[in-house]
Image (cartoon, rainbow, N blue to C red; front, side):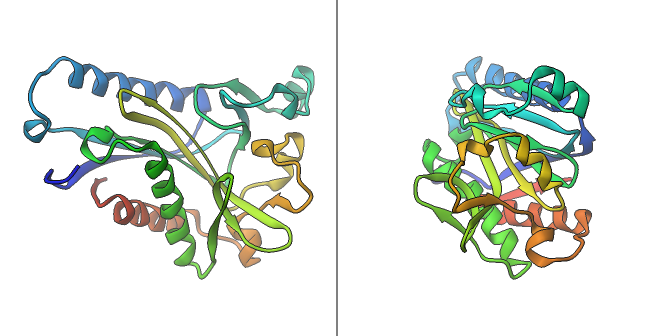
Length: 236
């Protein structure tokens, strides 16, 4: 919000973690922040808030958002277990997607009272963070009208980042999943984000550059991009 000091965001780098554990950690931080803001009548200009940013990889898991369709999961419960995938129906927006090793999954827990009350703008900022990150690798990321996320333009258009968020009293949770060196064959078990058009597919940074990517370096660049796009100071 205009006139407020630059916000501070605590970064939690968790390496590989089960989705359920990450979800629980997000909810704990969100509940703390929500309780703090609802228990005080101090004007926002006098309040202080510590925001959080979780960055991790997940063990192989499929998650279905509130607007998703069950039939977009192409595996039975038995097949999920046999292939070693977890599956969760969750409270973010969007359809079904995959998380797994080689993918950077980023969960901002931000109180948007200190930024702006505009979910559309918030999602566009998440997209811009990824677009600027890709630019640092000389890869051009773009948006496609009617589709949330970040894409690589071409024939077919290739989705490199999925976005799905949840808000509670203007506090965000969930976020985005950016394919760095992800096993893209795992997307074949779903209709990812409801995309079933022949002219659209899924990609990764490694596939676009045709080389291995240093995940630690990618994480460093992504954090810088996030700090720049949201104009915050990161506490690591």
